[in-house]
Structures are given as C-alpha cells and as structure tokens.
Picture: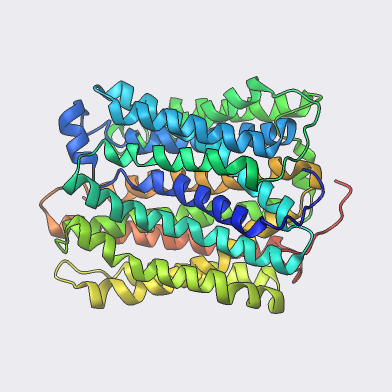
Length: 473
C-alpha cells in the first residue's frame, strides 16, 4: 500500500468504497426470501438448499486472504476493478442458472469477486484517508455502517424482487451497479503501486478447502450426528488442511500470509473480536428473520421493514457516536462494552414467545443488540487494519475480512445445529420453532461474551482505532 493520498475526490471515492461493502454484504442476505422459489425451479433438496448461501460465503471468506495478497502485489485499484468484473460474471451466471449446480457455481463466482473487492476496498480507504486520523475515523464509520445497511437491504429487496419480479433479478440487480462501479473506479481511486512476489496458490487452496470442509461438516452434523464418521472425518480433514496451510506459510519465502504479522500488537486480538462478532451477529440476524416470518407470520416486506430500526441505530451510532467515544475512551473499552451489550440484547431476544409480538419481544432487544454491534465493529476493524505495516494493508484487510466472514459462516452453522436440535426445522410447529430460535440466541450470546472476555484480556490499552502504531514485527 502506497503512502496515504489526500485526493480532492476522496469523499466520492469513499461513497464507492461504501457501496462495495454494501453490495458484498447484501449478496449474503438477498437470497433468503427467494430460496423457496429457487428450490422449486432448480430442484434443490431441502438438505442442499443452504448451499446457495454457503457457496457464496465460503468462496468469499476462503479467498479473502488471496484477494488481500493480490491487492498488495498487483495494486488495490486494479484488483478492485477485477473484483467487480468477477462479481458481474457470477451474478449473470447465478441469474441465468437452469440447474442447482450452475446456481452454486454462479454463487461461488460471486463470492470470489467479493473476495477481490473487499480487501482492496479497505486498502484504498486507508490510502485515501490514512494520513488524517480524524478523517480516517469518519471513513471507517461510514464503511462499517454500510455492512448492516446491506444486510437489511438484502432482506427487504429480496422480498420485493421475488414478489413483484422473479428470483433471478436478485442476482441481475448487481449487473448495472457493477458497470457503474467499473466506470467510476479509474477516475476516483488512487492508482497505488504494485510489489514483487508470488501469489501462493497452494496456500489459497489449503485455506479455502479447510474452511469449506469445516463449514460443510458443521452444517451436516445435525442430520448425520456429531459423533458420526462423516462429521468426525470432515472436522479432522478441515483441521489437517488448515494445519498444512500454516506449515506452508511458515516455509514459503513469499507466503500468502506472513505469520509474523500476528505478532503485531493488537492485530490478533482485534481479528478474534471480529471473528466472534460475526459469529454472534449473523446468527442473530438469520434467526430473527426466521422468527418474524414463521412464528409471528410477517411477510417478506414486513419482515424486512421490521429490521430497519436496527439498521438505523447501527448507522447512527457508527457514524455519529462511536468515533467520538473511541477518541475519548479508546478501542478496548469500546470493543468489550460493545460485545457485552450485544450479548445482553441476544439474551433478551432469547425470551421470545410463541404468542409474542414485534413491539414487545423483538424491537427493544434488537435495538440493544444493534447498539452493541455498532460500538464494537468499527474499533475492532480499525485496530486490525491500522496495526499492520503500510505495505501489508491488503493482507491486513484480507485477514480481518476473513475473520468476520468465516466467523459468520461457522457461527451460523453452529447455531443452526443447536437450533435444529431443539426443533427449529419443524415447519408449521411454532412452539418448536420458537424453542430452536431461543436456543440459537442463547448460543450467540455466549459467543459474544467469550469475545468480550478475550478482548478484555488480550487487547492493550486505550489507543484509538485510527492511531497508527510502529512495530518491528
């Protein structure tokens, strides 16, 4: 990553960077309401339907490290544009798919495009705003707020598009936006500079394979049994692949991930906070939407609308309040208190009732959880990025994005297994659904508490998330 640049168009560039974050998160949620019609049209089994979500998230999370490395080697602007091209192609394939396997291929291609966009977008943000900590704090807040906005918009738009158009348009929506981004990128984004080095395709294969196998084993465990040969072999294989990845990284002269980067103060702790934040937050969003639709009986439009207050709170706190609090108190109190607040909100949501209501059972608790997410997200994100060397900005961006996305995938898989054990898969049985949803909220609250404890013990003092630090790691 080159020296920070004060471009006169940097705020317009930030709008494009925030749009990128909005889109890559929206693509995880926009397919939710469309899944039943996709299942009918493409012949998905109930068992395999979740892979429309997982194919995207695994490709996205598994290739983020490679995307970050390529951003450093080939230039952030170049990889940002390349990611939009790949996302455009994947969206076209997913929308035009006539079979389940083509659909999964399109979703995986979308995830690969997002894996190029996300780390290069964060690198570009640091290039544009890194010279001024005050501006960097505002930029990170706007960038961070784009994620929950994209998640909520995905649910809302997915319902509207599926109801009034058809499910392929949840993918075709990406195409004009990608074309616009490609047209604006050369004029708004700094060129940056390329570096010498290799891309370590073996490392990318091992990391992606290990994460994919781990998610697959956890997703299948409720059906096959946690002690079954399939589950045990899958988890052992995942550990073996990830261990091989670490060995390869330690021996390569130009690895995908320089393992020494994790000795950088606060970088590892901030990434663990991001991982556990995703593992608690995404299951909450998923099961809250399930409760709204299948227990309270809200339609797609009403369910999406019900999540808008959460998004409003998150955006308000991230953009207006959180930067001021971080500047005054530092990142450690913000991350710890945010995760504790998220856990309290999740614990409150666990009290949902079969005969409950949105106003009493969902709204107040969800706002508490949203406030916790808003307080913890930007400080942990900023700490993870600013802790690294400037020339490893793409790598640091890839690592922190990987932490959040893989935490999201594994957290959702684990909470789905927990909820299934309590009967959440019994469609038409509100009592069983509510019991399963409640169990998932309790499990997610436990994850958030674990994150708060780890952050409290491992983060250093009260340094601001946007204050650079010098390290010899």
